[in-house]
Each structure stands twice: as C-alpha cells, then as structure tokens.
Image 1 (cartoon, rainbow, N blue to C red):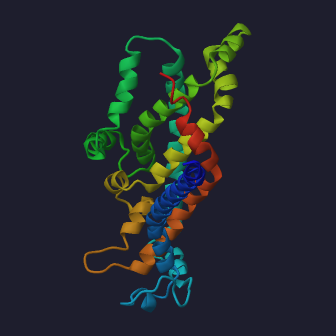
Image 2: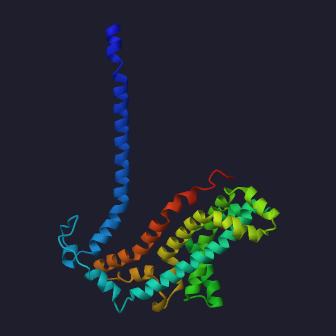
Image 3: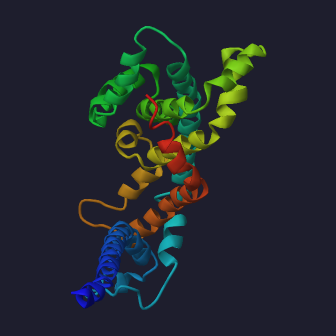
Length: 294
C-alpha cells in the first residue's frame, strides 16, 4: 500500500501540468485564430493593391503574389477623374475639425456631469447612452432639413457638425468616467487657491486627463474618417467629397476596379493605422478609466 501511495503521488502534478499546457495551447490557438480572422481581410486588401492586374484576377490566387507592383497605388494618386489628394484633404479637414469640436464640447459637458449638481443630471447622463441606440438613418433626415435651411448642405462645415452630433454623446460619457477617476481633493485645493471652475478644468483636470482625451480623440477621428452614410447624403459636389465616397466611385453598375479600389483602401487606411500606433497606449487606459465609478 505504501509503495502504491508513493508511486501515485508524482502523477497528480504531472497531470495538472499537462492540463495547464493543454489549456494554454487551446487559449493560444483561439487567440491566433481570432488574430488571423481579424487581420486577413486587411492583408488581402494590401496583397491585391500591390499585385499586377492579370495576377490579381487569376482563377487560382496564391497567398503571396509572384510579382509586386506600385502601379495601382500610383494610378490612384494621380487619377484626374478621382482626385485622391482632394478627397484626402477633405477627409483630414472634416476629421480634425470634428475631433477638435468634440473634444472642446465633450470636455465641458463631461466635467459638468462629473462635478456639478443640477436637476435632471442623472436623466441627462442616461440620455447620452440612449442616443447611441438610434440608427444614423433617423438622424440624417432631420439634420438634412435643418442644414438645408441654414446653408450647410454640400458644405464641409455641415459634415463636421453632423459628425459631432453622433460622436459627442459617446465622448462625453467616456470623459465623465475619466474625470470621476481624478481625485476630487486636487480640485478642492485649486478652488481654495482661488481657481474658478474653468480654471480648475484647464489647469488641473484637463492636464491630468490627457490620456483619456487622447483616447476619445482617436475614436472621434477614426469614426469621422471612416463614416460614409452622412457624407453620401450631405455632399453632392465632387470637389467636396471625402475618401469614403471616393472609394465607392471605383464601383459602378457594370464594373468594379478591384485593384484601384484596394489600392485606394490601402492609402485610406494608412492614416488610421498611424493614429492607432501613436495613441494605442492611451486607448485601453482611457476607455477603462473610471469604469468602477458610479
């Protein structure tokens, strides 16, 4: 009996280690599969953009092209009928304008929600979340009617205002959580030293909330850069179109220019990737800060 007990003792750690290894291997398999599913479409867009047209339309495509070319990308950049530079500039103006406007208005609104007490405060905060449930098609019709009366249809400024309407509630709610995570004692000390509410906001709160501001600025920029529906409805002049509309021009009723479409998609994605690379360290902290605050 004693010998059996001694021989059975090492099996439990071994079995436990095997179970842990199997669990770890399964977790890694799931993670790698998720990464593959998420990144493969982007890889295939880039692969088609740098592949010569005859090989891109081959009936037996290969994972990596046999030859590479930049002709598709150059053709998109210098195209006289679809001015990539003009579309890029319009997208940059609209996205940056929306980001600045959302940050300014969202910071003030979020600080008021986090620190001030007023009637209807809770209902207003809940309404910010409920607004996210409405689809864009419900907003575009009343916005189009209002913009037509004030001359903002077919105007990049109107597109900035439209994008601000659906970015502002989400940004305000996120910044509210971030402001709640900042110690109230710091603001009280600034108030004792004579700072007004705006002074506390600009001198104490906003510098400490820089990671949260970077996170919401990234989200607002990316949402504005990729938006299609409002841009399609609000802008009719070809000189004022943005990149998302320029992409759709490569698809018509009878033909799709896949190499041009994927080349322009690659160029359109590069600024978004650059913004994520620069601000990715702020995204997780900025989105989760204040998550345990009420």
